[in-house]
Image (cartoon, rainbow, N blue to C red; front, side):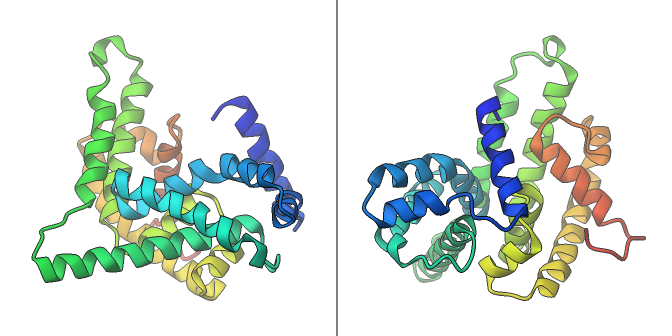
Length: 249
């Protein structure tokens, strides 16, 4: 994340903590017909929406198409947004619903056509390219190699989680949304968010631990000190899902 994007994200999180919608002005401007406001919101959120959709669908082309659909939905229905939640919460809600609908369609297509559709392999292949792009690990900083390995491991294992657990992990541990926001996005109680998150972290921990034992990035993943965002995510998940812990963080 570059300095400008980091600063924008910090402003967004501070406004959110104060229960102020940082996008209210642009949303109102777009509702009044200002298409430049729409463009600003697209630029602000397109990467985050794509990342969520990609991790849910595990297929780059599907994610690109659905990301476009999310913003088309916003363009067509933006005037109906009443401000009952943060704009970002509403946008993530659209993204999750698009993913669910598309997944149901693909599942029906697979059942009726007997097409052995395995979209989860896409995420492994995509992230494996990170490893292959490093020409010789002896000439590359150790943390860069470990970071690449971590991205492959965490992405592949998240892709294997059931959809309801994957939603929770992506929204909470990767996107950093609050329990309140996740509850609104998924239309479930905050208590359900916490219990589902705990189960998802336990499941992911069990999937990751055998891999960590044979991976040189295990230390970074266990202490959460790696440079990659996924490394921190993995460290948080492993710590939060410790079998001796009774509290969801």
